[in-house]
Each structure stands twice: as C-alpha cells, then as structure tokens.
Length: 154
Image (tube, rainbow, N blue to C red; front, side, top):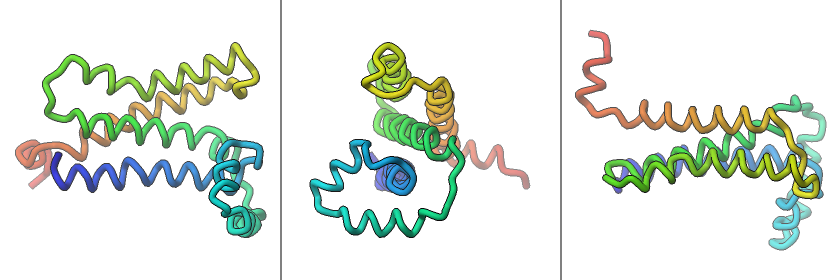
C-alpha cells in the first residue's frame, strides 16, 4: 500500500466515521450505544457541554438519522476498495460489497426484530448511496496520470 493510499484512508476512511459519530453525539438520544462508550471513557461532562452548545441547532431528520448510515457505508466501501486495489483475487468482490450487505442486513434484521432498532427504508437508500459514492470517489481519486491527462481539457 502506498503512502498516498494511507492518507486517503485517513481522510476518506476515518473522517466520515468521525463526522457520523459527531452527528450522533450532538443530535441523538443518550440511549444509544455511543453514550455507553462515552461513559466508559469518562467523557460525559465534556459530551454534555458539546450537546448543550449544539442544543439550539435543529437538524433535519435525514441528517440525524440517515446521513450517519451513508457515511459509514461510504467509508467502509472506500477503505475496502483501497485495500484491495491492484490485488488479483475473486475474494475482493466479497469485500467490496460487504459494507452494503452489512447495512441492508442490519436493516432487515430490524424489520423482523424491533428490539434491534427501527426499520427504515430510507436507511437502505442511504446505505446504497454511500456504497455508490464510495465507488465513484474511489474511481475519481485513483485514476492514473494518463487517464487524468486524457480527461483534462487543454
């Protein structure tokens, strides 16, 4: 793996996860698992201060509930594409579609078992957009120099 690939994983792999986590932190109820982790690492006071600061902001429902889903599937997909780039293996297709599969499977499990969460068809749509966005951005950011010269106007 090249240094450039590691930088891309940092930027497009972890930054979307952090953004999704931040959306959860400032806009979701304290009953979700994230707040158990926060309690474990003893950052409740700091978290409460951040939540208080953002309490007057009103985010639309899709930002609060669906955007974090898009972000983690995008991130996961992009990282899998980087990791498996240039590897000749039939197995890599499994890893490419794994993020989308996990997202849709988790939503279907919620449909059949309400204790696992609330089924939302919009989540499946956002998982799909995240998956496609990961592929599009991967293809865009990993063109060879020759391809870039061909597509760049003079």
